[in-house]
Image 1 (tube, rainbow, N blue to C red):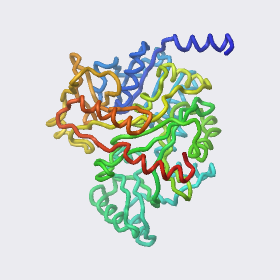
Image 2: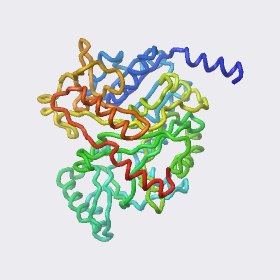
Image 3: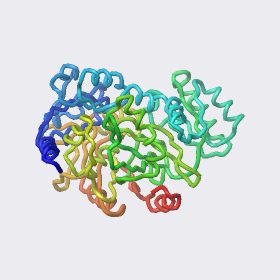
Image 4: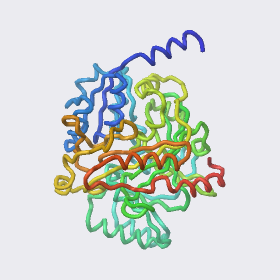
Amino acid sequence: MTTLSKTRKDQTTNEKYNFLFVSKWGESLDVAQAIKEEGHAVKMHVEDKSSREIGYGFVPKVSDWKKHIDWATIIIFDYTGYGKICDDLRKEGKLVFGNSEYTDLLELDRHFGQQELKKHKIKILPSKEFTNFKDAIDYVQKNPDAYVVKPCGETQDLKQLLFVGNDDEGLDVIRMLKAYEKSWGDNFGTFQLQRKVKGVEIAVSAFFNGKNFIQPYNITFEHKKFFPKELGVSTGEMGTSMFWAKNSPIYDATLKKFEPTLAKENFIGHIDINCIVNGNGIYPLEFTSRFGYPQIYIQRDGITEPLGHLFYKIVTGQNFTINTKKGFQIGAYMVVPPFPFNDKKSFELFSKDSVVLFKKEMKEGVHPIHLKKVNSEWLITGNIGIALLVTGTGVTMKDAQRMMQNRINNIIINNSYYRTDIGDRWQEDSDKLWAWGLL
């Protein structure tokens, strides 16, 4: 290492910055708190009114983030929909970690995302977009097959509306579309029918510094269904397992091909592409062009360098390798009623201001989600019912699971529930992925 590069590294490590978090639902609380604990100055704004209490007592909150733009060294946007704002702030010379108009479209407009995959010469699954249920039902009846119903735009935030059909004739999809028609009418918005294929669901993600992707890449296995063994309704997520890799055939076949386009679009942030893979190939399903939840919390446990300096290096376009742990990281949400549904009365009756208790003091592996801190007590707030994300790490998946479960056993939350099988699929999935040459 030259004296000049060593000096720059030392300056980056010792420097303290001002971080302004602009959060849609308060989901970046855990990241903001971690950066605050590293000694940086932090301010956080939560846009959703019913989520405004999230973070109180943990980090300083602001009601109007725009008044603090000049104060901020780095501005972090934690959700889609802020792309144009990010683009404009970057043009003004601000250091921004977040979306762009282009990457907003990749996630929110499923048709656009699929067309961009096709444009970048990436194999995609057949899909068709609809604006009403009658046309979709007619399509399935004329083209019987197994399909996945995927809401587009803002409706896709309601994860329980995503429906994965199992019937080869599409009869279960037709029944679901008729149910949606009765309950939603013309207010459902645009949605997509995508042909279902069997295989292993796997995602690859990476940080992008405005020029290129940063190694290593994050390989993720999501657990979206409410109950163990993938039963019940789809939720945003119940838990995730992951590992970091310096090389990935799935990355090479997907994200890598977007590198020139993302550089042209001046994107600086985190992007993930979810895929179904099998012996016939890699089939991208959808983009997440922001932090993934709970992905970022679990990633944080696998990153062994200060988070604030990591983000500074990314937004200033530095080329480096992220220091990460070997082995596996895993996490499970601990949730309370009415999750995964929205029911204000149930939340206020069973969950609002419930206390998170620890049998013994524990600092690592517990990530506050929809919480506030009052007199040093952690209280559940918001309106959805996600209390904590509890993580574990280990050289093997079993080691990571054991650590996570030990930490969960140390926590008392009245009426809480969580999945007990996060990571169990790895033994079977890894055999398939090795056989297909994808690990």
